[in-house]
Image (cartoon, rainbow, N blue to C red; front, side):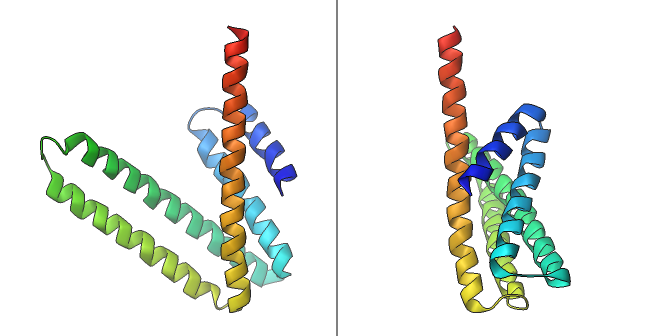
Length: 153
């Protein structure tokens, strides 16, 4: 898996710039993740397409909600000493956390129409490993870029 991931991430960084980086990179990663899981669970036809769409929608929704949570946390951090607007920010954070929980719960419940409990558990474990590999690979790429920049200076 890591052998496939490094070229995708590397070429993704080269060919895309600015705000497109995250969107197109996320698309490529979701496609790779879906393909791997579809192959692993031997899904075909409409079932494979339904699974892929569910995974994409879930990933984009959780990504959007996580971004909203980070922004709210930044606002809380910026305003905590003055106390300005903290009540509404804390309420916004709670609502976002609730939405994330509900999204994850609904996704797992909806998967039951496609996968059995063992496959769902395997998907959760594999997804965690996959996400960790992505994070580690991105860190390696950033570290190499940073080292190269310092060598060139």
